[in-house]
Length: 147
Image (cartoon, rainbow, N blue to C red; front, side):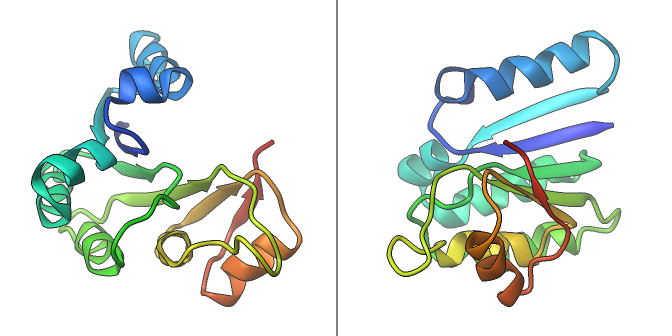
């Protein structure tokens, strides 16, 4: 499997070392065929959000799966960008994760994450209950606890 990860951060290797090194290890062990990394905040800050989605679509053309990691950073509505990835000719698997604590009344799950979850085949969460309910009410399915 060829994996593309849109990492929350500027430099995936430094900002998300556990995930980055883990996926690199899976490549070295032959579990993954490849691991492509895009630090979505770094690309967006340097060249803008449209450039990020263009780069992601180009990289996803070679990927079997796209991981939208921690897609709850401040960002413009990602729906069109994610839709482009979903509509690629080979239909890569899209999955997402939520990594920060969010509340029921305050610090609710941001729209960007609700959209990512609604367009994902599976969403990995660090909590369930009202957080999962927020995602489910926005169209998220296959919500899985990942402590």
